[in-house]
Length: 79
Image (cartoon, rainbow, N blue to C red; front, side, top):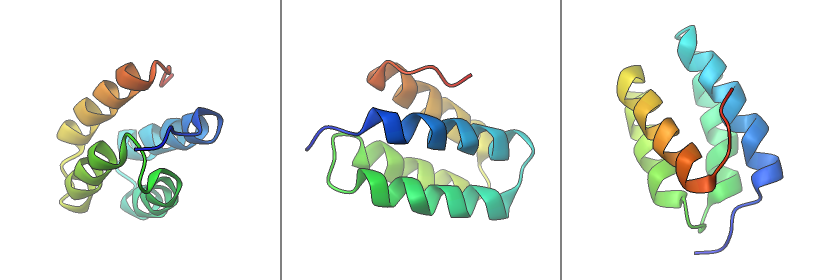
């Protein structure tokens, strides 16, 4: 897949982490929608799809782990 625009993705992932930490489902959904649009057809689209499934079923513990793997893969900090 194509490379991801990390400059765009980093703040979005950080925002998503914040929503997950406070279990803000509305924030998570809105943020995920934007992230999914940004990564469509990219190298991380599959992981983002997995993340979307996890957040859709309120599985925030798994979502945190997926986010951590994604951040490591992209070599970006989440904090």
